Length: 351
Image (tube, rainbow, N blue to C red):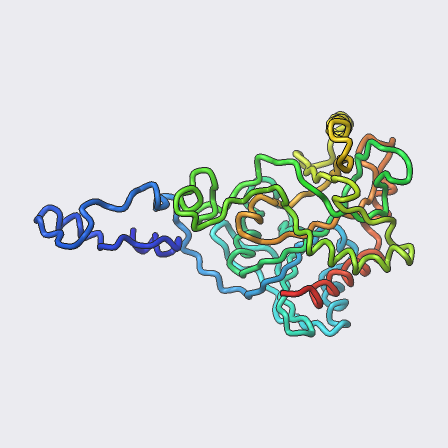
């Protein structure tokens, strides 16, 4: 038991578990007369990870999804190496939940180590929302020591507004919040499986409560925005929107495909109602696509920069989204640009 508690980072009792025998003999001189309060320790039943992490260490990582779809992994590596980056290794690390995702361990020209894990760590064929894949991803991010995470994705805009302020295909949006999902869980077998029933959070405060008032990193977004602004002037990006312009909410799919028209209309109605309830604040809209688990990132104290490229109106806003979607998502020219912006970000963003 003491060994298990050590793995979890929990302090052992002041006196050895031999206190039980000493108590029976009346020889407890100087030791506490009762075991440590159970409310301040994790139950060893839930601490069962015996997998050692042997992968690379890095404070920075990208798990960008569809913005890079038009590039094969060798093409992505070649683009990075052309800027002076060095691929140290490509590996899949074992995790307590199965073999981890394909990981590119890069060394930037400055000497900074950066991990690139494509597609949110979605191993081909696996369903991301059923825990197995995101658990592997986040376990690796945690063990690697990642503290700054970039997450690029395409989204469909369900903006209920009309006119030049409306968020449309080609725009770049830094989101304000997200819609909670039941699959935003923790890491079983570690101190990060739960918040509510975790004495390290609620009793000893060894782990911080993951408050979600500001789920995403404003400093990272501001830095990335400065890098992207020349692309706006060059006509390669539409407009850039921040939470000061519009309160964009990330909404992940609940099924294996796009939402129904009803789903989108319901979200539009809710967003419009909130906006009318709070006219003094920026309007609320929803962006629909794949969403990484922001709650676990906050619990692990990883700062997250999600940047959302609007590829199409959301399903149902227009009759057919396929042409707009494919034109943005599968553009090689756009993929090269987004990769370059990420590389520039990692080269210059301060520790």
